[in-house]
Image 1: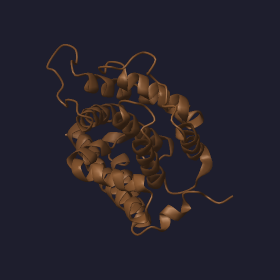
Image 2: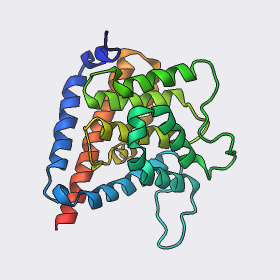
Image 3: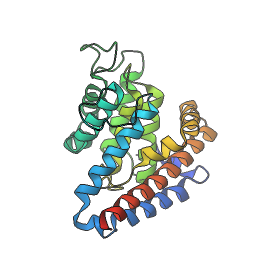
Image 4: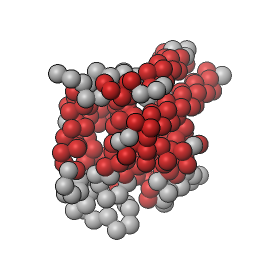
Length: 245
């Protein structure tokens, strides 16, 4: 059968950028601090990812010195980060269930969100079908390089907005799960969310380009994602360096 994502690999720069991302992440995973001490560095990466992701969705990135997190967006983003390891199996076999759980965790405290809203995709025409198609890709429906699939998962969820709230936090978490599940970043050591945060204006513009489905917009999104993952790899490498100092 024809791979539905294969044409994307022929867009300008996509194949080269995918290889650059893979090389950057290999360097992080091979750092001496990550050979045995990766649980600690991965945990730090997850906290940084949650803070950057919350900021991108209009929340706070600041952790309180003590006491509970008051910002609802940040609290949800931190819950998502804490749950990702336990959702990996579901993401590999039942991505729609994993997405529903991500939304429950991300949106539980948001103003105006009711229990009936949590984990339930919008019923607008085409939403269910596109989620099914995305799930098919995640569970083996494509053989494109992992960075391409990660970018597609991220971009499609931003474009589709399957839930009425917490779209960004859910999309970035799903991209992270895809990177772990495909073996691109198997221990979750990179912090691409920081790359998106540092280029927030381009992040939003590139995501809008992806949503058009036009070659120029798609290429812009893949270029942005590749750059963000390389920034995230450098962030992860810095975490490892600090851990081994």
